[in-house]
Length: 145
Image (cartoon, rainbow, N blue to C red; front, side):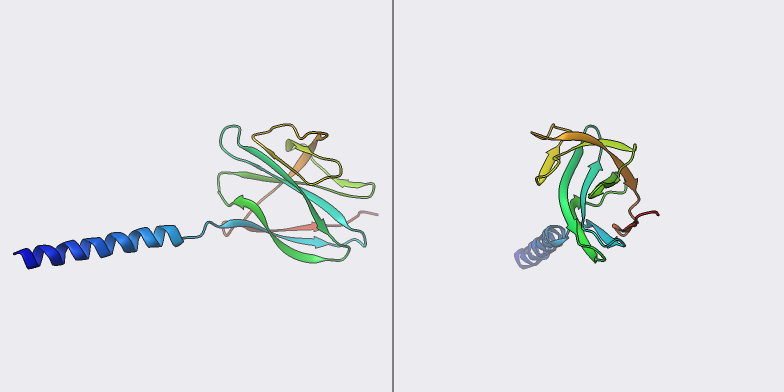
């Protein structure tokens, strides 16, 4: 009887450790964005995420050289219930929108959480972009002539 109880306890312990290990090793899926700069000029991009409640975050700047194509991982875990936005500038060209208003710093790297003001910053309008269920999307930047 004692031997059977030990075996049962060992099986339960191994099962519990396996379950804990699987949960802790599961990696959160980050939002991955492929950026395509179809201009000859560098572009500076800021991203925003709006989650439940007042969970609003903006971060920048990500530099994309002229004619460059690259994939970056945003500092956000993918959540199908969240909304994602971008604001970009290149010289006098600006890609902005009215979908979200968030804080940026005009020149320096910045991070704003919970909609807090960025020291020396300003509020701008961001454009919404959709992220697939796989946590990925592509943004193409062109200049209309």
